[in-house]
Image (cartoon, rainbow, N blue to C red):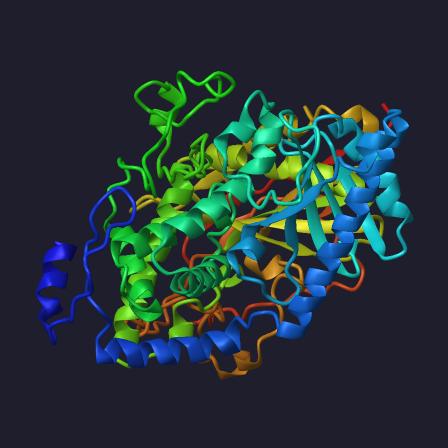
Length: 588
């Protein structure tokens, strides 16, 4: 249907067609060129993006390049010293090492303050143990390096650090087929480099390989970058950017945009953005999104043991709800964490964006309306708040990572409660805690509905949360960090949210009197008609002594109540509130 509309020019002026090309696994949907109206929209889009999502300046980019050069010097010196410690001074002068960037930096989407994802590649005599036990102290001694946080036990082992104030996530790969790293090694795309490597090393190399493959599989890298820039801004502002929480991560959004570019090779950025939401709103998610044919190396020694995404062979792969497959061998599903809840939220946001873009095309609103931040903290009456606290950055990183990896299970269990819908929020909020140096809050919105005609309804969250706490208590590193970290779980009403979650809004005084001051998320042209209906009173069954104590300096921001005299009070919706539940690693 989309292809038919393109061929007919969508009822508008017929498009000029570009030369026949093919990228990816199918023919393009359209070879059409942008119309004059779409060129005008493209200019407007780029103007708004320069204002709302500026890229790093040329001067700062040169500074980042210098930082990467210094990081490479440090890693080369480390490899040389490691070779000398092994008694091979001759190899020390030849072994070498190289660093490769991946993620947003490699794709060309560098915004002010963003970090740099880096992979350090070393020869076969340099071990991961040396990476953490020798390189880490070396980094800590460097005068320009701060906040060194090694996480050797992570799914993908990593060293987090700041070099000259630039945040860097440093991974490591030991190439077992090379005794020295040649200076002319410009990419890691040769599959033979993966032979006989362990899973952690392959995962570490995957980011670089996938980024390079994506850039090689799109018809125009610049249009791809510009389109992805808006899509990532939209996904972050609308709260659907988080792989660990079950939404899409950066690489998944990049693959979706790359596939779009393959299907519309001549469209400009504005037209690609419009087609993005239209295409994926209609996508049949029984079919994976792929950029190239999935390769298997069943008969290649050293590569045949790697697991490839294949729902015909692997029953677990059949359970994936929105498969988006990485283009580099070994091909994997980058969205295996997606649940029914997050799928519903992602599709709802795509549908909303599609509606807003119809208004943009008609000149009824600006592009910024597409990526207008979701008013999450005014959309729900109830929230789950999880405070993650730790004494040191090293423990905090590990503790937060463990809790984040289990949040999907909490969402799943909450949605098994009848009449409860959950909205996970991926944007954690840092705050000042009087007892802990490092603290963030994780929030989930709860929508509780009662059946028609039902006068009252009680929802017990305690059992679900206690189950989640038990899962958190199974942390393998718990005994190592006694007294160094804590987690607090509570549920709060909207008016009880901490001040750092609901900052004051200048336009609050402009809202009509007698209405709840929750900011709406209406699509332009579809605004809800204000009503003066009385909201049901919510009765919280919680003794005063078990209410969470606010941190020093916090103030409660009250939403204006509706007038009580409009209608007689009705039997309210009762939510059985759990007492504050704390996971504290203390001496037993």
